[in-house]
Image (cartoon, rainbow, N blue to C red; front, side):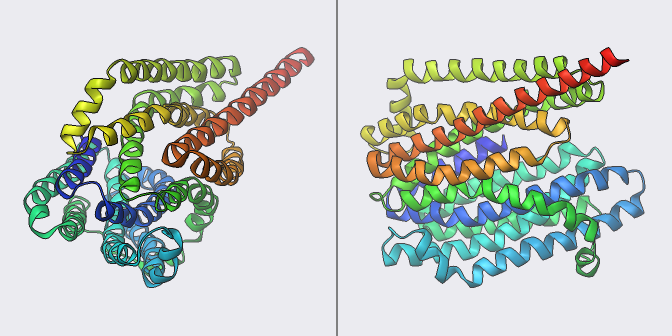
Length: 420
């Protein structure tokens, strides 16, 4: 429902404002706040969820740990967002070199508001995992969903009157309201910046996560850089295709990858590497079947897809056709993103967190050249093709190394059994 709400938000903005320079500026303004927020949230959640879960039965200790987590989130998230906000006039013209001066100025104005909203979203994410640690899953998710629905209604009313400025201010207001509601549910933990600063254990744990996630998440900024040099509306079309495929990848990950994760861990704990191989291959097979079926439907139902998209977003049929083709090209990305999550979880189950980061770093460097060539030779569609190639190669390399690792562990186990 939340993913659908985010898609509806994009639909509203594009339908009311139209595909063009203004919506390009709006989409561009979202990129850096979204990337920074994702980096900080992923690192903080990975470290603090197990700590808070252990203390979920002790209300006083749970609230105390929340205080430290909130302080650390404020230092890390607030510090990064403030740094990028202060230096925005330096890096934004470089990131969106293809924008006109007016587009860059509009993007700066919108981005500054979004950076503030990202700060509240970071703190809200910490509150959400604190509530999850006490098995309060539904209440936290409902608050976020209600916030999204509120913003959709508000945007529907305000966008025709105040334009894109209304969209960013409504998003900020939603972030603040959701944060306050989650604070209430979490018993209003204070932000302890001093304790957060001196909590060395969590800082140490976050270092490799920050490095790995930073590489993975900044890939979208490369896409925005090249798309900014295409004709007006290019960033909007690319973002719509990536948002749709990204939502599908998230659904597949939640539906297939997450249920398999504990199974993988149990196989490793029992030293059952044959079972580990069967389990992760089964997950990849299921992802493959779903993606192939979706791809076939996309091809067969092309006329309907183009008509529905053209009507929903109030765009020309030619633009809708480009969007359809871009979604088709990104099917490889969809498969690699969902299936790759299963491979990564298999590495994590074996206690190996470094290999996926190393492969991701090498893949990111390769993607710079692949995306550049794709865009310079084939334009926006080449950029989508470069994304698919980058993710698919990453997935392939990780799969080969995983198979080799499992084979090695199996041989070691067999040799040990013979010696006994």
